[in-house]
Image (cartoon, rainbow, N blue to C red; front, side):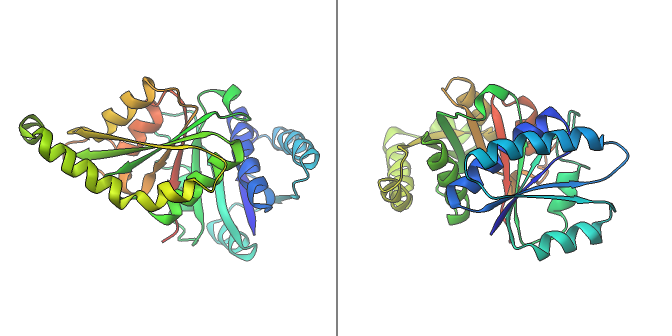
Length: 271
């Protein structure tokens, strides 16, 4: 299978491609360096990025392909991506207020490609080739095999410390009233339901720790936990957080991408 890195010639997209490179390398997949020509991107910058990434990939014995589509159309893009048996597409965010909304990433997400999409926001370029701590945020015990697999592959590729941050959303009134006994029962139930993932991690080249939190503001709790932890990469299951809530002026995923203090991947699994 193939892992696609969508390039536009910018430093952020070139940096994003190294996550795709590591992801492909860990599975012995082919890395496809992909670009669709358009008026905004400088094709010479794109080709320079491709050359630099290809040089490193070849030195790591990673198979590399380069594809530049000359026609920018949804049909053209979709047909190509479906034809190559792609596993995951990595895209970078742009430097705007809205990181995903009305972007090329969103265009891909709405195409119903049956391909996983990883939207990467780069905050620290220096952490890309070596990520010591990778952090996955989940809701309670809602951890799909797809999200855990993506998290595990990257953690294995970097031989990183893995941390799952389980957030239980609860009202302010309920949070104030919850007792120690009920807290222990809830934590015990979550740990029990996640025990198989913990067991699997024993056979992988990374350590796994699970943390818990009860909160009335999930987004703020994730941001706070990341800020006070030694984290290099934050992974978020993005589809659930891409739905506007009644009390929010923006999508929760947009706020996380904007305010997270570390490199962040919004992971959209194929349905």
